[in-house]
Image (cartoon, rainbow, N blue to C red; front, side):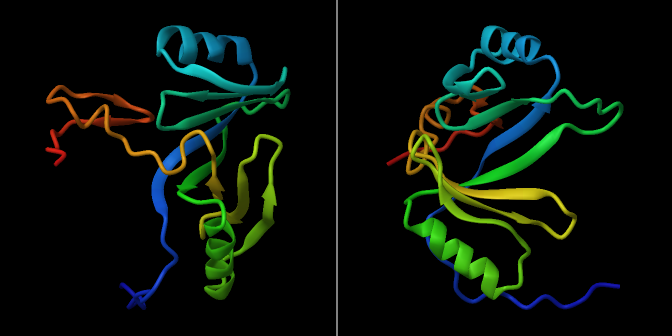
Amino acid sequence: MSSARKPVVSRPQGMQGLRHVALFVQDIEACLHFYVDILGMQVEWQPDADNYYLTSGNDNLALHRSNEEMPGKQRLDHIGFIISQIELVDEWHAHFVAHGVKILMPPKTHRDGARSFYCADPAGTHVQIIYHPPISGRLVVSALATKKPRIAGLFLVQHYFKLD
């Protein structure tokens, strides 16, 4: 049985897709070795010894040290959707409130100049809507300009798109 969905007629502009993932990790050094040394990501920002923010140029992977044992459980902290302009964060927040989305943390500006809020999806996954200065407003151009499949941030782009 499927229930009829009511289409949302209008939404705020600026949604640029899913390009941010945050993970709880116990061995942050081993994860840094994998993501930076092996995969080739760069450390974008390290606010302290327990938090690293990595990038491939068009994405953001946060590694958060956790001392809590999580055997057999996923270590996902939250997922993030990038917004193109800082002022649109508040518009998206109002949009979610108007549609009854559970807000976990209201909009705030972070130490690095990012602005975001957190909500929960229907399954309980924490979702961050974020304006992140280093990647907001950028297009994934480098991976699209070649016919060869390559990693474009956290996604594998397998198709060639002609950019006019």
